[in-house]
Image 1 (cartoon, rainbow, N blue to C red):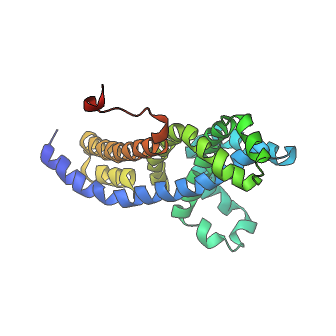
Image 2 (image 1 turned 90 degrees about the horizontal axis):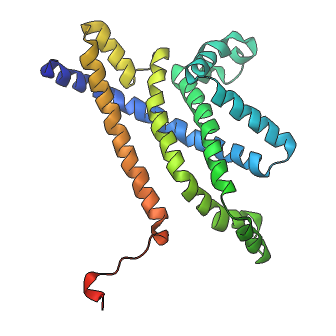
Length: 236
């Protein structure tokens, strides 16, 4: 492999990092809100809310993300009602179609992770909080939420990494993120191996940083659960 060309490819592909991070950041933020709502509906909601939430999770987890992107980008424009709506100026843009598809997808997966975290909270603690006179919101904020987040964080960290890699699929609808720029560079140079090695290295670096951030947050949230270490000089 030509190292000088790989350096040139790196300088080219690095310009796609902001778009990759933007797609991942916005979709994860929106998807987290969706995940909280869907998980809450499945855990505490009545049947007429829980069943649609379950159907949403089943549909989005059971179909490929690539198909979902195609359906949103190419399918929504087939309906006259959508083209005549106020949302059409947004939905006809590939960026927002990718955001919608990625957000709905990560919302479905994230809801299952958060649901597991919510169900891990011991019922006795919830009953004790209610016995102390806490309102449902205060009980969630002080008892349920912190414990559920600690339990769900490792799994949700994996979902963040998967979503960062899934942004590569946005290149099929003309978005110039890392993979999109890699495809364009390959079409210009026909250097497939070098370009994709560099692109893979960039994704690897991004996910390495993300892993460190998730690990630091996990240590911060579970600091009180780790045993305190006693300095050697203080041991009698």
